[in-house]
Image 1 (cartoon, rainbow, N blue to C red):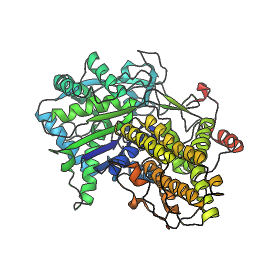
Image 2: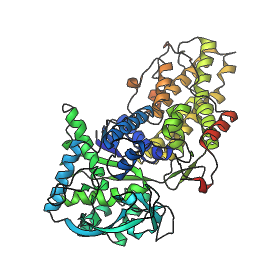
Image 3: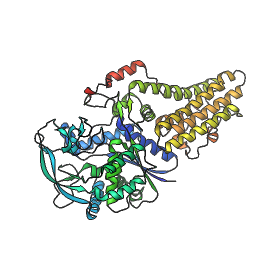
Image 4: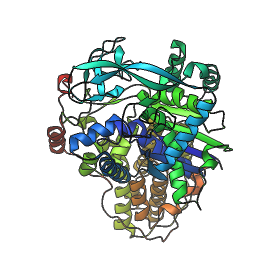
Length: 571
């Protein structure tokens, strides 16, 4: 048994996540954590809300709330949404916790002691109309490198170049839209990345065979361009006050304390349940821990460069990422999701339309792993209708209805295998082997393609075996075929569990089983599992697992959530 530490990029506290956020880091991390548990590993799966910075201050201002109440409200909203999406966090915490402050202070003190912190007077953007220094992400303008006209002051999401606000062409405040900006001098603290660059480069190069191209390429790009000192403080009120004389009126930059939040959130959970796990067993001088991170490609630089450099600079033995799964973007009808422009479906609304497993399956079978992917309701309905309703749902309903009507609502007797069953088992065993390999490698689109192929094997088997015809002349053989099909339902439930946990439980429940009855996926033996449901076991047909999405429903969804891919309408 291995120890697997899984973290997902921490969502900003403001607003609610859309489907792109879900597939960019949250769903992949959940599916991997569930899968690793089913492989018999000890898993710690940590996430939480990222609560500091101007994002929170501006969000609270817009809603007429104090910042703490605003963060409390949205933390609960995030937590509820992720629970409804069946994300299986061991703990969902907050970067604003006292535990995170304690660890942030400790890490900063170690960096300062080791000579990696330097003081600099810099020029920053001050918005005269907003009467505040603007955080980098709240200054927008044209990227000097690629010409993208919606670049933020911290990073251009189009070319991924890390920027300073003063680099932008025609900058303006995204708080008020004002271009009445001044450059004022202010004193700040910097993390001296060039001083850590040699050690960081050596560490990153040990990851070459293991990181996907999206993550490794971005990390190497940063190193090739040469690292620059990175400012880690801000002129704000909301955040952790800097624990250094002369800087008490400043707070740590959100991108300094947010990644440390993975550790702080683990400690928060550990402090609440000290009898269960010690946070240090996972993060500090921890033995045998494999650490896997999931995030969108815009977050990769901070997790492949800044955060590891921060930990390396302490001189302490912190757990650092072993595998960084970077994801590309999910677009909506070829454009961007936008709450303000009423374009795209957001997680809360998605669950009002269909159960979580519809979304989980579609998103992961279309995961933007190597390149961007696009969501549309036409594509969504096509996959749900064909794969979920037509292949999986129809098989389960067909088998149980036929067995109940012809033989009664109890599992029939088994029989001798013919070449049909032998071929089925051999084909399934190879499919399962490939499915598990792709899940191990976090190649989710390939894994879900194999999962669907496994369901198809069941449909092919019943079509060739034709129990509805066989029963006219050989009831025992027909009973044996249906016995095999019922055992396939259980196998499908087990293999589908990491991706569609509710559907898996519903399939098992039809056979009088529960999730606790599932075997580990490690060394999964199809032949053995084909006889796991005993003859005489009662079952219930129940309702269909999935509903078919009609053309009328598709039209309604497009009307409600927008389908025009005109970029000019994107906020």
